[in-house]
Image 1: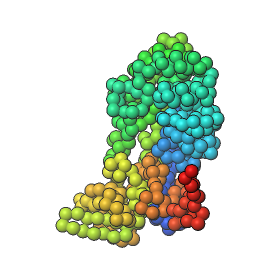
Image 2: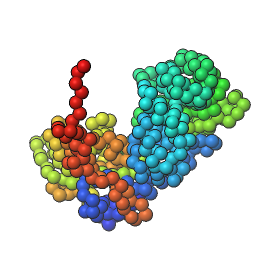
Image 3: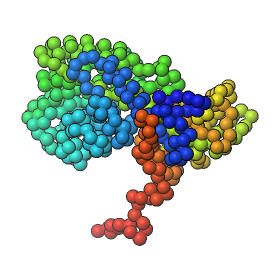
Image 4: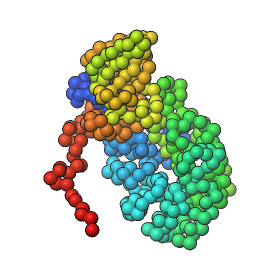
Length: 409
């Protein structure tokens, strides 16, 4: 549990202050018990069999998190060959990994098909390249549904399905799955219900399809996670009815795949950071901390307002504060207008709900080394990602005397 106890924040039963004293700040800390509870909540919602839940590694490919989810029974969804690599390193078998990417190069396909993972193609061009690499192979297709997400670039248009089926047939291959992208950070149950209806219709047009993949993109309410929980139970009921219907009409069992990411792990971690300065203007209070949007880009990229609390339990008060990072980048804000009580330099803050799109989106922008990551499980903590040093900032660069040159012919 991530909760206040004896007057201070505890993560998995361990004091946040003690963790920072041990490993410094900024520090991402994950609670394995929260991961297990979140997994059970989503997995138990789906009663249809067979249903396979694939964790969307795009939101957090930490090897220890992937391994924990694998122990719980999760499969993996990969958006890039790098996701596949991390999944294999974490112990997933190739048959437990589904890949859905776009604009695949020959090197991508060589790696993916060589690894033996299931590939959902995104375009006729990608399918054509894939068939040259692996004729007589099974593929899925990611389809674009105009009525579900008209502005999306992702997926084959429905009108292209017949061409895809023809290409596969001519190559001795089969299209065995239909996959959809319903957008990211979505909370609309109706959108997924509409997608289910269209996927069933497409599955009936494709004789070899034996899997409907609802994709992921399920949202998370950063302001009020408990009240804004995505309604997985209602989605599961709709999926149960749809999958039973399509199985009956096809005369064989069609499996269901679902790919939760953010909704599964967002609430399982906090980012601990130390206050360095407090500035006041007549209308604003700025609380400067020792992390930066280079460590935690989500507010800049996703525009999310995050819950930020003091590690010592104290009233939040009515005064709002902008929590800002340790650079002069004008958009270096961890969150804005946070209801934060009075703080002073040296105080520890906790940025809540950073388990998704947290560390994995950090970078060397602004030349700040990346933070460390720790896992707490059963009252024991371990460091799983070391804190970077200045040397890491240039580790892949060749020194001026070592740079490789190419002369013009």
